[in-house]
Image (cartoon, rainbow, N blue to C red; front, side, top):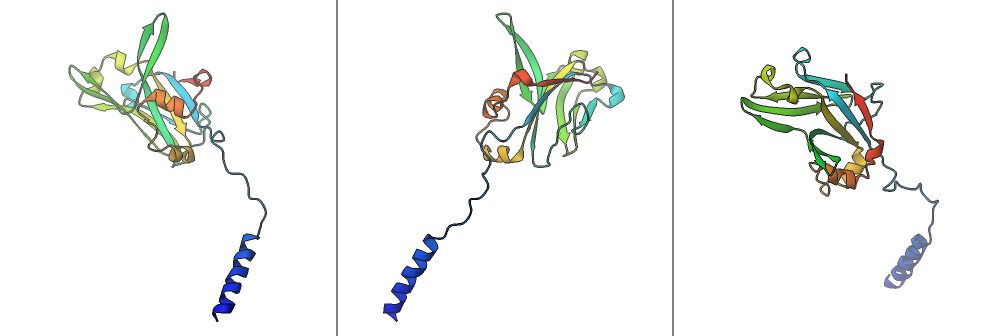
Length: 181
């Protein structure tokens, strides 16, 4: 029995090593995945709109497809700094909190695969919030496809806008500006 088993195993091993099938399709490369980035400018939070605004991703202004599993990051243009005549923007990931003399104001957002909204919340009476916090606000929205986000999970600090730009090769010169006025 032992004399037959060894040649049989050898024959099976040679047979499976020499099998070859057709080449499969090429998998995705790191450059094949492209997200979407756009700016929402001149956003006003008004009492008539319950201090919020919302947009549908498929809206003609945006025209993007978002899957439930995609990462949607919303940053607020928190403050601009003038350095040697050049304006540098400081983006902060939502939710973002401002501590006012009369309470706490929070910029927050929620989203589905169809739409998203940005809204004001907190302990402060929103009717008494200074216009500098409710008028002409600017937001940057970064949509990262889920397969790319999963591959980089744990390696990118999403709260650091500059780290996100670097990790996903965002070309800031091509970011669309969408006015909500």
